Length: 599
Image (cartoon, rainbow, N blue to C red; front, side, top):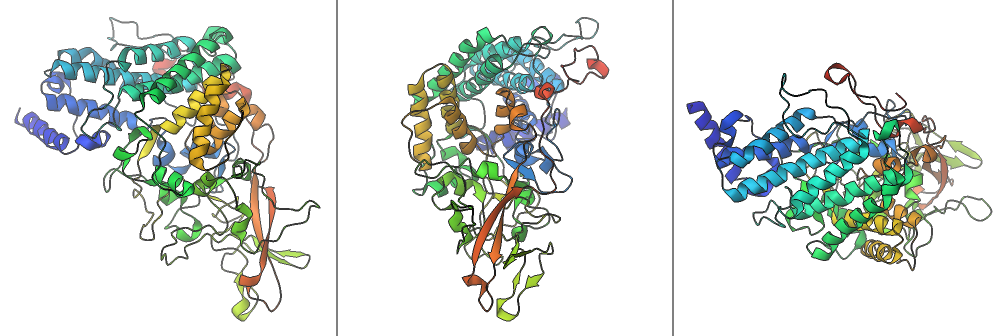
């Protein structure tokens, strides 16, 4: 009893100091049984533990927390992983699985017991609604991976209950998610007033999840097909209803006036960068729901795995954006984003400064991607303050290449390395595409990108996504006016020419550039059922800069040309249509479950 009292007191102290950082609360000892519901502090700690346990999977938050191959973007056309053992194909079917019925059991237990907890009725109501939100989130995470799964809403008792609960249909699971959210939207508070609003479920968090989930359901109905009696797929006749539900949920957030696009800097590129690597989430009006991180005990390693070659500590370079993504970013005048590498006659265009190739690009490009000669840690960083990318040297009709980053060409003051200090290379572990990811990275000349040193807030739902979801639902419903208004809000904040009309393809395009590296592209390609078309023997491309050599001239006064080539040492991506749904693990206790098609 003394030990239990000590644990409760310790949790109370932790809780009282962490009101503004709710999802950071990770009790070292979880009290179970009736003791967990005996005091307000114990119930609070148990509620916080659910956020902590589900937290690393909030919409695949492992993109920033986990080991590099977990980054979903490197399994799409956004980027490739730089290491030789990474991404040898795109036949991924189960690498991002989520089947946590152990946590589901504990949530069901909490939902059953919290109405009798020793807390106020207001807290009982609030915690019950939060737990139902988390349960809905988990089922959404599973249905988008596997289609229909067993819907279990209570703790099953061996010898009393049937433990072999069959899979519900995909439509039934989406309807369950929508129904759970409808039941809590008007129960959850719009805000809590204690600084935790961004880090635990509110009314608008529930709306945001409903908007996303119903969008996914609509996509499956519109573009998928019903198989194995509806265990996967949704009848096409249901598409309009789901598009409308997604539209209405997004509209509820928009009309609330509680959120808005981040506008913290007059420069649109700096503004978009700060949206993601800023630390003051509580005052960021764009963030609806996020996972908080703090140093030293609750951080992650995104910078460690993704810093450019000359700025890294050990690992680095991992996420290499492709030319395909770079060219998705238009120019600010609204013209297509194709890079101006060659003139009309097919001859290479020389550039005095490699960065000039990207002049006039959508400011979101400069906030999301590091490119040749981009500034990085520019304020006094001893490593150079810029990204130097050079694949080799052109001497007359010859192209000279050396994979050794230290090897030089020329003599005396005019000597220069064949490669830039940041690559690109084919055999070494530097960028393979001529680009690095910038979005989310910490830019500071004093920052050391080591393991567990990244602490920028992990955004799960933001207002920009809501506008994009709303626009997609609107365009699918034939409501081009709503879609155009939402898309132009996104483009206006970005600093790019507004559209006078909008199509479905333009809505999808805007989503691609606005949400690059945000763990959306992987799922978008799957729910639109176009992954097999995008990756059907389609190579991805790199941009390689070359210095054009002039004898008796300082390299600083020479020009660069560029070549777009297929990414070296990477096969063309493929995607087998049967893998639009992940494989169901049918071993052990789940051996009775019906397997998905294609496995």
